[in-house]
Amino acid sequence: MQRAFPTSRTRTYRSLDGRWEFVPDPNDVGERDAYYDSFPADHDGQYVPGTWNTTPEYYDHEDPAWYHRSFHLQERTDALLRFTAVAHEATVWVDGREVASHYGGYTPFRAHLSGLDTGTHDVTVRVDNSRTPHSLPLPDTDWFPYGGITREVFLETVPTSYLDDPTVRYRLDGDVATVTAEVLVRNTGEASNGTVTVEVGDERVGESVTVPSGESVHEVELGLDVERWSLDDPTLYDVRATFSSETGVEDELRDRIGFREVDVTERSLLLNGEPVDVAGVNRHEDHPDWGHAVPLELMERDLDIIERLGCNTIRTSHYPNHPYFLDLCDERGILVLEEIPYWQYDGDDFAREHVLERGERMLGEMIERDRHHPSVVAWSLHNECYNHQDGVADATRRLAEVARERDDSRPLTLASNTDWRGHEDRCLQYVDFVCLNAYWGWYRDDRNWDEFLEEVREHHPEKPILVSEFGAGAIQNERTWDDQKWSETYQADLLERAIDTFDAAEYVTGWTVWQYCDTRTDPRKAMKRPKTKNNKGIVDEFRRPKEAYWRLQGMLDDGPN
Ligand code: ADA
Image (tube, rainbow, N blue to C red):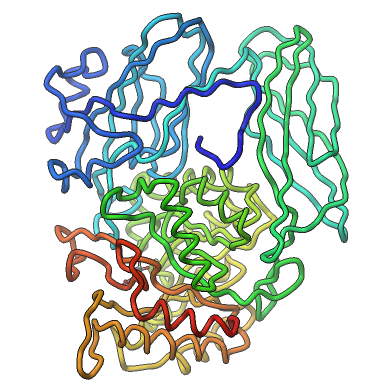
């Protein structure tokens, strides 16, 4: 997986990125015709990572498609074939044998390949980006369902006994951290003896263990003095887990961690016990040239632009972002709210086959992947669902359980606009703070933020509010005599007024503007938007600032809140 630091000293990684053979499969005949045994000779090509929806031939393709490539091995090995993300449904064959299948376009998966022989091997992947009533997201969604192998693919050699990503938890008492690491060893051979070692910063603890055939978990504890991770001083520590077998074979995995505490009071989100004035943006992974598969350099540039604006928070609306992006947020001291793509589901949607189970799995995968990022301060369970309905409340309770079982160190949230629709929100009881979306002055003018916030607060007096969406569409360079809707000035004025209101409400812990950049939408479905874009970016799709960007920068110069 592409990270901002080396993830192992013992494994060799081979990138399988680059140009793959590609055929669209609109009639879904690839499995019937066994493309995994014999890939159609009449094929095209696509780059990995990438999406076919930014190439003219497949601009609107929302159907299955197939990828194929081969790789050559100089010596026999065991390996993990890792997919960082495939949007949205994937089945993988190696040398004609199915080795993995995965649902969900934003979380990783892998296949363990044992005893891969010297010589040439074929990888074939069926990818499907169709949206259905059973998918995450649903067919009517305000972002484009880019299809493809959208993040990196690797082949990673592993020994017979290899590690899985360790789980690191800690307790902080002042500057002393007590760390517990659960190290999972997968032994594909006979039971054997060895040593599990965990290092955090300069501290190191080793334990003799016996690893049976199959999986075993080994818990190691250590204590160390730490500097806490904070927005101003985002100190990170290396974590290394090693299994050394008595035969002298080693497997090592590395990660990074930052020590900090996140909490909520009635009024605020706290970082290390101090209230944070959240000032942020919602960011889709989107660019006209690359769709979701934004290059690593663009992630850096986005963060430069966001930091220069003066923001300290990003809501990864509405799905898990690339792990490299989160590494950069860790390094720069930026807070992240991460979400899964339940976007405007109602009770009937949640009741449909696969819908809850897929979301639970995705939530689990997101937490497992990202739990060590200090920048990630909350998990968001869904966005603008029909939170007054029984089915949605039940699903939320379940999702909250799933999240808390895996991680009890971060608050939970969800983005509600139920009050805006005039209903009582029955889901917020399961989370720790309120994310609130509303578009006063854009879709509706009958109320304003002042009175609306008061009303929401009355319903949920015990939880702080983060205004997670507010905004207005603005077409780049659109100027009107009287600052009409769609002009840059209308957008800038609306955002400025709203932020002034949020700053004055002591129970509002901050805000994230909708949205960072203009993003592609899908005119074939319900979302018919000017220029087929959601134009509420404060920079446009090529990251050119609009008036709102400069206006907010001016406001934030004086510091948020
Ligand atoms: C919703 C939704 C966003 C976007 C926004 C808008 O709040 O959560 O994804 O669609 O509305 O622009 O209308």
